[in-house]
Length: 140
Image 1 (cartoon, rainbow, N blue to C red):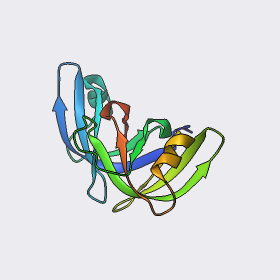
Image 2 (spheres, rainbow, N blue to C red):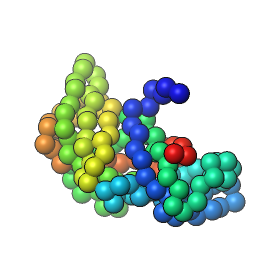
Image 3 (tube, rainbow, N blue to C red):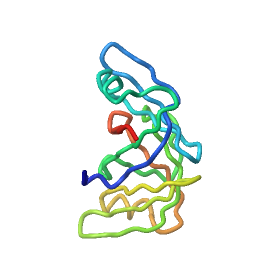
Image 4 (cartoon, rainbow, N blue to C red):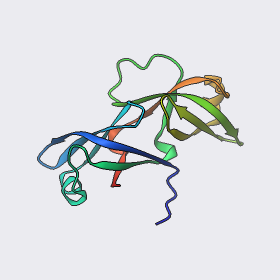
């Protein structure tokens, strides 16, 4: 299956917290950083997820925000550290390619104004921010 989603990471389920309808799935990436996905209880069961399961993580580039400074005091659970490896700019938007610490890569689509104000260029240290409700999980 071909997808328009550019961001695909692999990881291992390290914890599942089941709720009445929704669950949170904690996923450890190969380099040690972690992601939380908020998915339906049915999805956990349908995918057969359990601790130790290998999964693919899918995130749309438009659902990734970037920060260059402190990210304390946020409700966003997914805060992945990395470095901008390249940036492409257009009239209104920019695409930042981020190499994650300890491996992996993400693409973030942000406004050109934001990229300019943050001073993004190759080598800029950033934190990629993704709400757990915007993380899709697929059984590997």
